[in-house]
Image: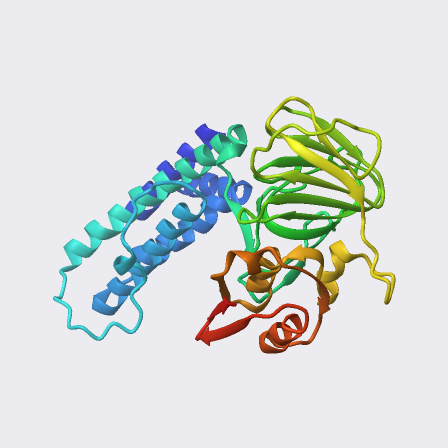
Length: 374
């Protein structure tokens, strides 16, 4: 294959110089039919070679830079240029006229660049096949106050909550199905027994075949939570390598910070577990809202901000992401006050006024910041 490509470029050079015989031109035409990529490159090169004049030089330079950008896009360092050297569009700045000789030298430079591009492109493709860890990643990110949903290439559905980020390789689904998550997401995973779906978070790894579940792993919160709606999944701790199998309607809560060992019980939900490592976790049941029998842990998908017997400090963290504000509680006693409630269409002021019905506090707003005190 490499010998054929080398032969193509030898024949192209002979064609452009006018030295190619009839037999060589026929050979080149046959080889180009078998190599569409080289044919495309030769067409651009032929276009550049026959361009003339000052305006054509600018056009030729732009076409060359298009090729360099293409090389950079596939990860090949084939003659980089800075951002201010990218394509020249509607350039009205006077230019110094160039001689035909200098333009031919430029065209020759393009010939060499194209030949190198073809070689490096094939080499780069081979290298990337050997080193999948170098593949570029797709990133989906939400800001505070916003949510999004998407469908992965295998058909898996993902809902991403506010202030979250998920990344996955661009070859996702070909050999493996893996994503990295920071924040909160709900997954409805397409079943594939040969390619398990794996989620990496800061504290745990989650492995599933096909199921629906919610993961909450904000770095600024005390716990990482995995809530299983249906199916089954395996959770592996990054510290200690403990493995937990969750059943439907169960939730795993893992402490994000080290804690003192407590009770050890792997079988009964609701018990705190410690296996002698730094991991302290708890298995409990999912919470069902009495008004409509919906699941509290996944209610955010339906635009509901739900909290049950949570401290003001915990509620404030949720409200910061939900309303895209910063909340500062100055009184330590107020931080420990506990609240239960559901917000749907309330504004931030309406939500704070509702909390004031059960706890005495005042608040002051300054742009996107809210200051709470006794």
